[in-house]
Image 1 (cartoon, rainbow, N blue to C red):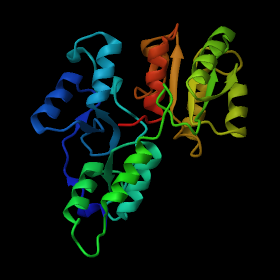
Image 2 (image 1 turned 90 degrees about the horizontal axis):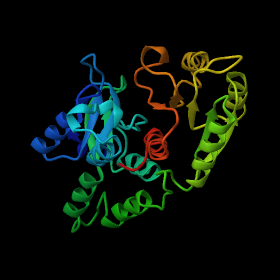
Image 3 (image 1 turned 30 degrees about the vertical axis):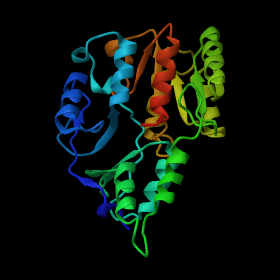
Length: 279
């Protein structure tokens, strides 16, 4: 069976500049708990996903009304997708591997075509229950759900540890972040300059980079630009941790920014989103 046979076509969407109040209204109006987030230019290219869980977490952490929080502050940016012609088992494998229950379905240009959920698969398995030759079984759905529900640490990362590169010239910040992340199941590589960071990236490609901007030898901004222009590194997610703000950041608006001194809960939440915690 192919994904296109089960996916929901033309799902409801939102954009990163929308408020969480607007996202909630869309979810309420259409009885859904997840929305793909698409480009601001009017295209259907997926840049993130946001769930009702993301919205609740953001509301608790920010302590502000939903109308004052943007979708880009709460959405998951690292999104795995599938294609309509893929076999359904490929989508099941992605769900199990990443711990998500919903996948956007995109074409070759990454334009959104639909949404596939574990619920869609479960309904089809129930429909085929009495068939002599089932394409999807209820046991198969149970196996996928078991993979999705594998134990995860407090940061939301799976127990097969993600490696995070922490780049900052302040020793206290590096030690604080290293201890926090290791206590939550992540592997950490420290670097105290942009030069050290580039060597570490070439030596052991990290799953995520926590990056300070103002450093000696090579600034974090310079390192970010280098990564962005190298095809093999540009898909590594980056979180900026800096005392700077606003126009001084000189990085993409889509990059999450945590102000110094970094708050423990905010760091773990942003890291989990960047590494795609369960949706």
